[in-house]
Length: 196
Ligand code: ADP
Image 1 (cartoon, rainbow, N blue to C red):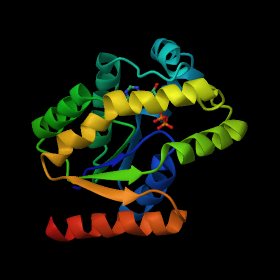
Image 2 (cartoon, helix red, strand yellow; image 1 turned 60 degrees about the horizontal axis):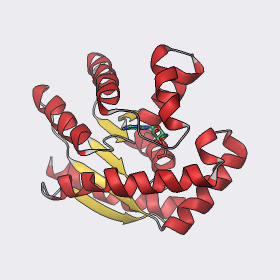
Image 3 (cartoon, rainbow, N blue to C red; image 1 turned 90 degrees about the vertical axis):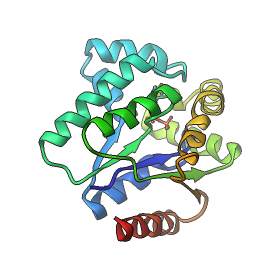
């Protein structure tokens, strides 16, 4: 079992790279953003609550997010998964602490945090470009995009420090060809797998 976090600001390529990595390593992909969007399109109570925060580029409250994540982790474990890639979670220190505890209670641990590094200007360009085709409300408005980048700095960057203290963070430049970023991520994962 290998458990990874794909970490980085909004628009850093976490979703793109996760999709490639889950195929190669047969890991279970959990994207809290994707789960929330699916709840919104199914018009569930959780979706309606999450939407209020997401549309403004703010985080959904920790209690809501952590409970939802725990359900998805347990459902996947029941199916016998080989490991997880967490994408977009944890985004706050309480979420990171909850994840560490959740894994420990299930006899698991976090193996590596792969942190994609992309400049703010590049993030803005990418998110606006995505918004033009994705229809995502939070990708079309520059104020919302700027707020998400600010929320990342205020609340999420500390998660990297949390895992740095455990020597689990690997910084990967997130600008350039998708394939070369993917290769850099695979190098880290392969070295972790050899040690396991
Ligand atoms: P991106 O990384 O491009 O911002 P995501 O799909 O990961 O996109 O997240 C979209 C939105 O969903 C976030 O701006 C936030 O409102 C909500 N969200 C996703 N994950 C979390 C989380 N772990 N905690 C709180 N809110 C979250």
